[in-house]
Image (cartoon, rainbow, N blue to C red):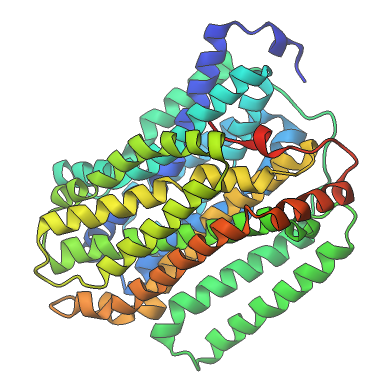
Length: 486
């Protein structure tokens, strides 16, 4: 660790936190802001339904695939250096996105954008952990970090609608440029360089197998409806994904320093947190993608009007994300997870009753319920993931759940085509009816979250976590109270 860390003034630490949060703001917002632009992109670039899904999924998939690798690169080569490279790549690729003359160029630029994004968030979190060394100040810094995550993702559609209405869909990428420049300058001036004294080995084979599996699953879900489920290419990719998953499990189980330590999943709280993250963010990804098309293509609302209808989600995040953290701090993960699962289930059921003439007030109510349910899930996921884990493996456990969030969004968007393909292929009076099966799937995801709320917080779950800890490392474990987010 750099010696200057211990001598940083409170003012400089605040600027470091602000620099890191700027990167988080644009990476998280980009995961949602583009959703409102989907109808405009389809019209302007003549994109097919599957191409529209790839505009969103290539970003979240690459982000998910590289998060843990980029974090290791920061530890090895210097966190500030990797962070600045990520900011630069993200800025350049955002500019390329805004200038894309066709849909294929836009998808390629989004691919590059995700590479830059993957080098920012995990490294920024490492920088915060290195700079804020006191227990109280670190907890406060991580609290600010967590709030920025929820708020930026929730504000994305509203900000996107405003930019599209005033300028064009290309402006949703322009907004990244001044923020990246500011973060690059602040990082160069105020953020000290740090490296890890003990570095984990990179696991390229495990990483590659995980990427093949993830891309294979999403490719089959997105391209299956268009090419046909019996298409040799779809079947071949699906088979390759299954084989990659089997090979991944066998290889990682035998490796001394694996990409993902599979023993984590013997802990019921950790396995439940991972599955909860996938379920919640799958529902979230599907909701954002389909409702943007419904509001603009089916209902013919403007982008600004659409963004304003999304506003209850942003308000829900502002009010209920901190409340969820306090609930977890006082009562553990169960109350927040129960509320989240119940509200996502109810909101998804309400969406199944949508028609081409559903009143706006009813839409606002549905969006509010969905927003509150989603905003309640992040704090308990993190808490459940690290409870009972050894202190030196809590970061790795948290990184897996962060990756699971991105995987969930990718799966949710991909499900839109495979479950509600008719709604994407045609606009008109039958859009709401064609999307109904998707909302039934989301109801199921909400029920899974609700059930896991009780399973992951049971006495049996706590015992499983404490049995796993000694297997992973002979260090003190994080108790339930210490892991709580507040």
